[in-house]
Each structure stands twice: as C-alpha cells, then as structure tokens.
Amino acid sequence: MLQTEVRQLIEEFRKLPGISLKNAHKLAYSVLNEPALKNVLKNIVSITEKLEICENCGFFRNHSSTCINCSEKNSEICVVATYSDMLAIERTGCFSGSYHILGGLIAPLENCLPEDLLIEQLRNRALKDPGIEILLALPFSIEGDATALYIKDVLDGTDVLLSRIARGLPAGCAPDVLDRRTVLEAFSGKTYIN
Ligand SMILES: [Zn+2]
Picture 1: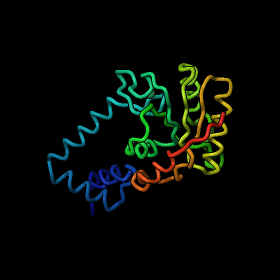
Picture 2 (picture 1 turned 90 degrees about the vertical axis):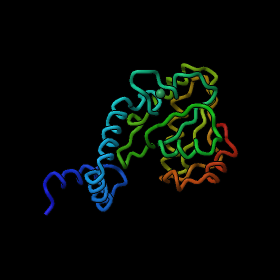
Picture 3 (picture 1 turned 180 degrees about the vertical axis):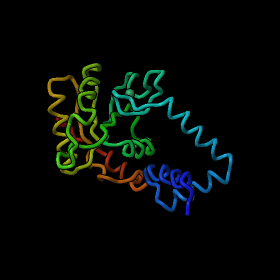
Picture 4 (picture 1 turned 45 degrees about the vertical axis):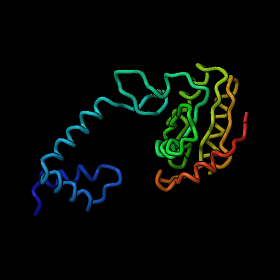
C-alpha cells in the first residue's frame, strides 16, 4: 500500500540504532508533514560531514582541525570500552583528564580481537607522554579483565602509571542505566596494576 519512496524512507530510518519500525513510521510521517524537519535532516548531514572519529583516541573530531581530546597534554587518560561509558563518566564530573575510547572489549568469540580496538594507539599516546597515568574504567567481566590484562602487557616497558577503577562499570549498560551513583562508586577507588 505504501509508495516505494515512503517505504525506502522508513527503511532508512530503521537503519539508525534504537529506531523501531513504529518509530520509523512516525519519523517518516513527521518529516513529510513538517517542512522544518527536512532542514533538521539536512543539518544532520552537513554537521556529520564535518566530523569523524579520531583514529588516535576514538573520540569525535572535526576533520579539519586537531582533536581536542587527545592533542592537549593531560596528566591522566581514562580508558573506556564505549562512547556510552565515557558519557556516563562525563556526566558525573568525577574525571577531568582526557579519554581513550577503545571501541569495545576483547571478545574472540564475538570476533572482537585486540587489533580491532584502539590499543596500539593507547600505547602510542603513552609513549608520547611519559609519566602519564592511565586509568582503566572497564567492566569487571571476562572480556573486561582480558582487555585490561592485554593493555597491561602492551604498556609494559612504557613509563606510565597504570590503574584500574575499584569496581568495574557494569558491562553493556546504556548511559541512562549507568546511573551517577554507580559510576561514582566505581570511581571511588583504584588499584595500581603495574
Ligand atoms: Zn583524538
């Protein structure tokens, strides 16, 4: 019953994470019904074209300028698995250094290998800033432990102070689930591991 273009529009919206079929229908209807929303879509495209993921630290950066997260000198780097984890930490205001977003955790059964993550890049950052403290804010899970251990080995021989937060961040939690108290508790202490 739907026109091909409408069906295509719904399919495109469905490709976005977190958009159900119902939401895709709603969005398609809204965009076609409210002309101002077409501009919103155009703006999204034009803004995203200026941005990219920094290949050095995993954070967003404007591709015509240097990355604000990893280009400035910091005394501490907080290593997280995902952007969501970083957001949850950032919201609490309990960390003021720079971040390193690995892009996941080592999980061979899910085909996520060390080379798929920004681990070598973390080593490069460590080599660039001798004496820097690297705080691992990773889940206390099999994958989180394996990743922490792997990073410890990779950083062996570099001049860094490597620590891990006292309690891991719960694995696979959306940032809104990862509440402020959980994050603050996780950051309430740390263990030095090198
Ligand atoms: Zn960067």
